[in-house]
Image (tube, rainbow, N blue to C red; front, side, top):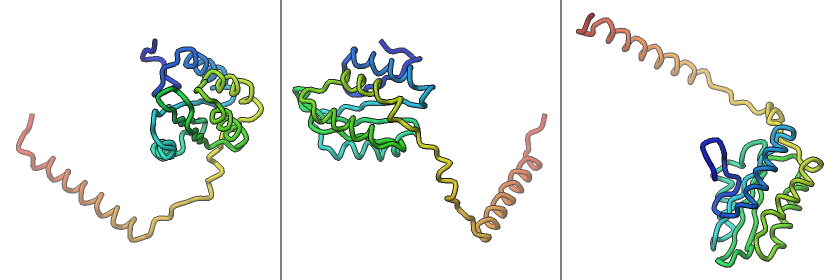
Length: 167
């Protein structure tokens, strides 16, 4: 059962035992390793859907390891797309291979792999690495913004003073 205080880790697939295992994984390693994982399962859809999911989530959050998994009607694994900002890609590749080697989808096996390997193979991306990227505003854009702000403030000021309603 999920209530307003819980967020599901497995989306699009019902496996209570696996959900409990991922809840444990996220709760145990969440704070200590700045880690969270989500699994989205798609039935009878092509591999591109995993890439679309990555685009939709814009690569996920800096602390997430995300799985998009495709299965058929019988629960057989068709594909797995893993995305994360982690600085250590070994966990991404190994866990993807683990899922793709499964005949039937077994998310408990994936969670057991992660419980064992997150402490030694996970490293959250620090976005301070991108501090060298800046956006410089042109002088004309700053002047235009100043003029628009001034005109809007003048307009609101005139409206307030000339408003026909009073106390």
